[in-house]
Image (cartoon, rainbow, N blue to C red; front, side):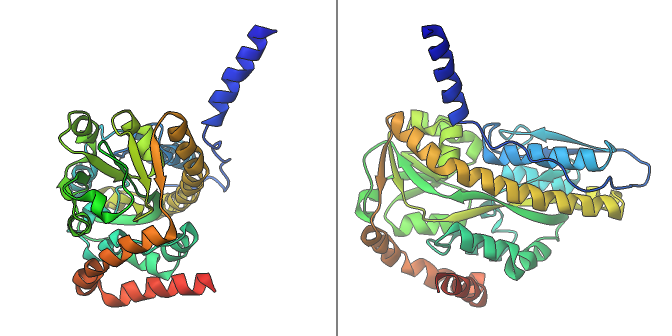
Length: 343
């Protein structure tokens, strides 16, 4: 009996962290041109991330609906390069697909910086409206240049702050703190404006930098914090929800042009389904993982609306500095979606 109870307890612990099952594939088999294709799809996050779970679903859809005429090889943990290296490989035609955060791509597409503006997306539902509506679809078209074809959105999610020094409840607590940021100018401005010492580096180098004290803190969604085991070297966290970051699904233009139109549409359809499923996985796991991090001893500070307002007030100059660079009309359109949603 004791052994049976122990077994059930172990199964429950496994089930608690189990990701939602992969949905069944729907839709008819898509006829191609008689040729077989092999697509290499590389991401920066680990196998235990919602993003990789989304890749598994993408692979399932594409392979089943192409009757195995398209094979998808999935690579995680930056095995074939970090976000920027992967995008460069797509442009060179040496990699077929990747799904980077929009943030490292701001130098290529300045309008992507809108996703890095602090507190612009107050809820996931508003983010969905923007990404799946006219604004997001136009941004996919705008990004389908420079050797790339953009075919869909998924989510990295809301970013939270962790550090090794102390609890953070106000901008004053960030004074001099070395915070790793992505290689993105608006993130540098955000953390510099708040009084921190922003330090850009690739995600692949981050755990070692935290472990060795090269940087004091970093900011990522809860699911990434846990899947990358940052809590092992970061005892403090603050639930800031300061930036909502999407992933953008990209195909090499060289690869795209080799595919028949029917397979191009299949990739678009699969990217949309992958994005919807991956967002579901991300959100289902978000609160659960936050609680798991607490249970494992991470000290998590939850900001009050008044404390959030202090951060927003201090960050107002970032909006002023970036309005013309990003496009004031784009910012205003997204803010309008927030107002409509709140009515």
